[in-house]
Amino acid sequence: MATMSDTQPKPYRFAFRDFIQLAKPYWVSDDKKKGWALLLVILAMNLALVWVNVRLNFWNAAFYNSIQAKNFPDFKHLLLVFSGYALLYIVLAVYSQYFLQMLQIRWRRWVTEVFLKDWLVGGAHYRMSLRQGNSDNPDQRIADDIRSFVNDSLSLFFGFISSLVTLLSFLTILWTLSGAFTLLGYSIPGYMVWVAIAYAGIGSYFAHKVGKPLIKLNFNQQRYEADFRFGLARTREHNEGIALYRGEDREMEGHNSRFANVWSNWWGIMKRQKLFTWYSSFYGQLAIIFPILVAAPRYFAGQIQLGGLTQTASAFGQVQGALSWFIDAYGRIVDWRATVERLYTFVQSVEAVRHVPISDLMDGQLPGAPAAGGLLPQGPGSGGSSGGAALAIELGDLRVATPDGRLLLQADGQRIQPMQHTLFVGPSGLGKSTLVRWLAGIWPYAEGTHYRLPAGRSLFLPQKPYLPIGTLRQALTYPMPTEQFDDARLQVVLTQARVPYLFASIDQADTWMQRLSPGEQQRLAIARALLAAPDWLFLDEATSALDPPTEAAMYELLQRELPHTTLVSVAHRPGVVRFHRQILLVKAGGEGEPARLVSHTPQLAETQAASESGDWALAGA
Image 1 (tube, rainbow, N blue to C red):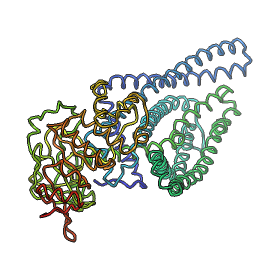
Image 2 (tube, rainbow, N blue to C red):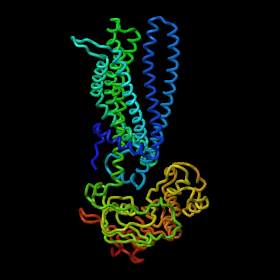
Image 3 (spheres, rainbow, N blue to C red):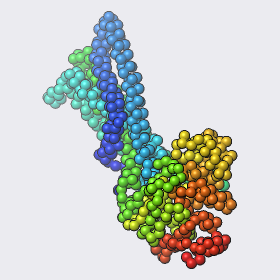
Image 4 (cartoon, rainbow, N blue to C red):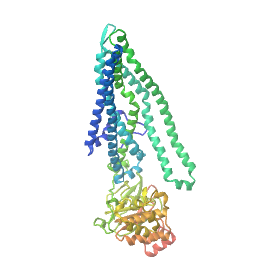
């Protein structure tokens, strides 16, 4: 799928098209009634504010005329009238802002829930991480860009509507107050209107010329800021490894390099913003005195009174301000455009990995598309084998590839029967872990015409288990609901996994991936598997951090406590061979050829010899 470069924003017509596609789903969603109700209420309040400004414009003329005529009774009465208008204006301003914030958070909540669901469900987040493209920093796009998108969209919409209504309301007033102006023998009716249009038009044109470079600069600044923040988060998450490697200098170098992009781009924004501020400040200050200068000849000619002069200047300011909305909102439009671009490219990336054929993801290298197996979130079982789980895994002519389309591994008709515990062995880097990830339903880059994925519920235990931030109870039961298991059951599985002491901290919140050692994390994952009781359990070096006796004890535990679960393992230590009934050897192919999967079921003596010698070639393979 073709996407725009991160450094080349789209033209405005595409930005508006993308905005419609991003915004429309909420306004036709199940929350549309409350959303539209708030939108109409806020719109009505904004129109009421314009009406108050119109009334204040007429009040302005009467008030200054009373001062010129030294009419104190009218002066006092007009002060009371002003108090009423001012109170109404304050109430409208307060509640329009209040309801606007209410709409902002409702819209943001809905969009955030949709984005989170699209990003997480079906493993899209994982597939996106395998692709190159416009899907960097999903945390920033969901947390910051959605907030900016909602707030800026509403702010710009109501600002534009308010300016449009203000323009229409005050054009008639200004036309009436302007009278006619004779130039070179020609009478120009409503000349102040034409002056206001010309003033705002010329101002807007030069504002766009001066501010146009800010579009690209602000677009890049969001990306550089997100990259810098992501690097800092990575350092925080992996602080132990960095400390063990004494890698602080390299981390500092990387952070400084990423911040250098923030620094240099910010200087570009500063310089261009300074130039734009020079221009906009001059334009704004001139707008204060300009209408009085234009209307002054009629005042000094006695054609209008002081109140008429101030009313004309006020009406001119309202018309000019409405016409200059683009100048005033230019900075927000620039930020809004960059935000829309980033969110839309994120949506494109999600759609690409969820709905686009895998052949498109791989640039046509492989035309097939895998089907995902049943994943664990369907809920834990009782340990019994379901009807679907009775089907064997058929690898057939499966070919597994890398994200760039390079063929990695070729199967050769192998199958894994239920309860036929299977071990994948062979040198590193040939695709064993990738194949198991495909079997678990998360690796999309594969093809074949005769294969069958696991039926039933699957659980995948990687070498480094994922433990969410929260209580130990949440980490142990992840991704299942914590209330599904009582304390007695949790204590039993922790004891069986040889980490009974962890139960004392079962409701303690912590960053457990940093708190627990790698061996403790792997034993906690084994306890999690006991709770889940899946039909298929995939273990990718899931016991590599354990000593051989403990590793053997964990395999014995799984086979004893999960008698209806089929184990599919990837391991490099020969000691695990005896826990598997089938050995599938991954052998390197010839130059430019993928590795091949070779079936081998050695005799017990051969297995024992291979285990003792560490020779994974296995006799007869």
